[in-house]
Image 1 (cartoon, one colour):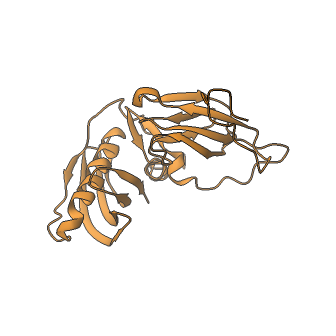
Image 2: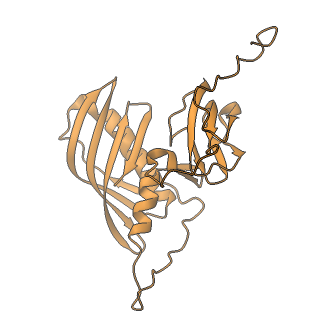
Image 3: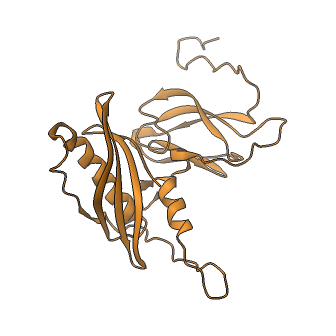
Length: 222
């Protein structure tokens, strides 16, 4: 039942009672907000209350909090009720982190972690944490071979990718080869082979991005 005067929306019904609980987390004034809760590795957006709320872009989570930014306001289900957690799965863009104020895709973080070098004794070499803020990586991308209508959206993807590479300590990002390009839903989907340059060497990666000229819908790396 709605509260008299309609000050607040009607509480969300719970058709599936397998969450440990629900939590309202809101970005006020487009600010980053962190809502502390034990997520047990599982969070779902149950209801959007305001703003854009794309997983990995305007909201995400870690083990002990849910975060929102850029005006996203939502009600989230988290954890498990009276059951064991499911085996850990790839969370896709919801596994993103914020580094130096930049939303960094979980795929990039996982890729960098998998490329750590092994020492002679078989142990993994620990890399230094990325700088708090390093600015975007220098971008080298010749898009003249792409359809002209796609270039603003693709350039938006490239610019955001360069910011993410810079946030994780990279200094340069090069567009090497187009894998696929499709138009849809007012924007474009691009998959491209890229090379990111870090202090410890060049790292090949594949970027997948869905974007319009003004908005990034999804950006991840493999």
